[in-house]
Length: 421
Image 1 (tube, rainbow, N blue to C red):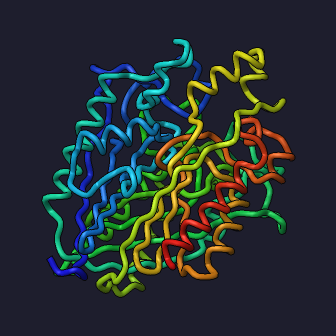
Image 2 (image 1 turned 90 degrees about the horizontal axis):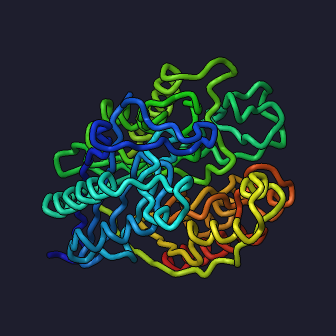
């Protein structure tokens, strides 16, 4: 194989649960209580992008679910046993749909039954399907070219930690504020084959998967699912969605009642923007593919007065015990360079202020730096020190103290800078 040959392949695999076989809860809204999914509105999938240049390999797997448990990624890598793919160069991300099954987190097995939503049989089905997809992608690698671009989707997503946003209705009732901080950059990486047919389109935009609310009991990919379907209809190939720093970012669909019509409308709007970006691109053979990985020890677990565990009346000891069983003490940060694009994984819901800071600093040497949020593992919310001090839901769902966000951003910038050096 020539050292400069770039090859790629993409696969989509179904992970929609058969509800006659698997009894699953929906993830993301505590207001649903112990209710279980009542049906399927639209299929959910895992998408696989495998890339290779010479002896360097990298894989990105996106899933239409709320968040990733590290064990899921570890078992996929181990069982697939694809040559050259390891935990150091395989990234797994979640779209953060709040209408996806809450059944794929093995760490839940250590929790009391009322907090344990894990479904072993469904988990095994998903792992098996992803393993098959990875192996098929490996067998179908072909010469490819790629291009990347970006645009600002003004007003599509907004910072929800502002007056005029309702966490219950998911609606904004006030105009954008002058001091409202938001990362509304839509980034696209487009890969084509020798025949110019689309292999894959990777889309990165920060935004909660919360057009649908807690009253919805049907499985759905929410707007990211609709967006991916729209891109595939317009461009062909496989569309993968990697969320960004969406911790306090929500789609703005108006102030009325939100449902599946708004899911399709918002997803369609973003799909059209993706197509507009792609139509301005000229794919070329990539000159750079590289990966880098580091393990980060996280700060000790901490609780503040906004913690939902404290509000539920748990003792400090019981709450910390519960958190320690569900969340990790260390995480793996993976970086991927594809020509001018630098991608770095963040294992949870990072707030947009940190994303803005990261991109401003990283652009000193990287044309298109991207955060792949909700990737490789989950550590809940990741605020900046300033946002942590403001309190509120997002601060209460940060279990590692006020310095977590700035530590991760410092590390992300350093890792990408080293990769590009």
